[in-house]
Length: 206
Image (tube, rainbow, N blue to C red; front, side, top):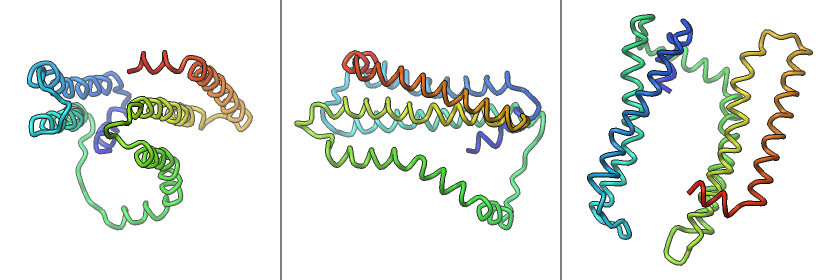
């Protein structure tokens, strides 16, 4: 979220090339942590049991995500401050008003993601990750694929909406209709592949 606010100057002044560089910096920052952890520091460690070493390795892998965010924010700040410096000026009234005016949108956005969390909770209850549950990883991987299918349409929709905001009503309806048809066709194709080749899909992804 912080990176999203900082990158506004780059978006406003169409510095998309610089914005792309910040995303590359984020990935490189993560790799700087991941590569040594996976291929050097803990290369010969046995992860079949929990101990101090395995927990440290886990924490470092999680920290790679934090490092990605730190790297991205530093790079965005360096590039954006030359165009439009941003200052932190905490306004309680503004924050309160904007939350009050947009609470319906916030609740709907939260509920749109909550169903995925609910599925994860139930998956953990019925298929706990312990000994004797050989297919837990496969089910988790299947769920991850389904989550991707849930995320893609909303991401594409967000990309489309701001582009058609200036269109006439008929053109908006036509664009949304074409978008829905495209989503259904792609979704149907992927679903058919999941149904016909589930084992091969799981093996390739894993």
